[in-house]
Image (cartoon, rainbow, N blue to C red; front, side, top):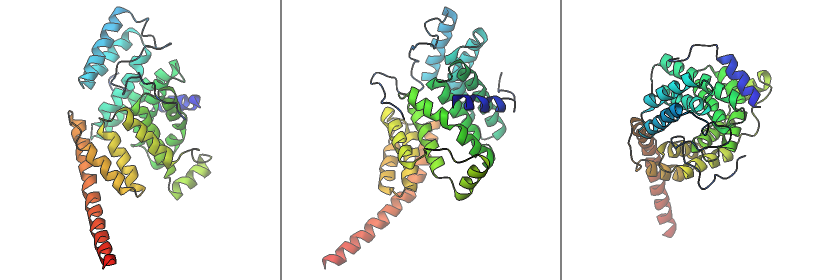
Length: 301
């Protein structure tokens, strides 16, 4: 299945030049989030890094902690000029490229960053085809590109993404971002329209198997448990609960989310989205509560 991700990414890699150049429980000691320092593990090359690369890595990690994504990405790009097969720099470069690209409103610049992300991730996946980080990075890059594609191309991407999102969650269950993407994929595929199912059946040989709403909700709950300070997980989960008719759960999540600290512009943006989603839900809930109270009062007469 991983080879399918590699093949897809390889085919897409010629589209445009790069910009600038079921899972186990999470270990108790594992870092929460991609901004955490990479854990030394067999095959990631950290122990063998020369001093110059270790210094750049340390600087890149510090800049990520300071939310200086562009500077951190530049550090990883410098490392790749010293070692073109540096696994951590490749997959982290992919993640940062997506994060930066998402902030642009202009679709051309957004697409350029997403394409660069896919190219970094493809190289990381070639080094570690079953690595949790490389599969997460490629899934994230292609999932992001899907938002700019036609409906037919999105369906093809969602099918080919299946192995990547599964491996990401399986191999790195300590990464909340991997669970978030796993949940998003499950929810999106589980809600294919009749037309999307028909197209998938006729052209793609069927919809991706195994997708379910229950799994999607469980995955987002896992992401939130691993990183409760991230409002984005609350927002994603609240939207799912809203569409599943679980209004009270959605309201509780959104009220918790808007109380979280807003440090970056991204945090402020998510906070506003949470408030926009909360207001009509809260009004509807208040209206239902009043109607229930009147009904109960009449029953008691």
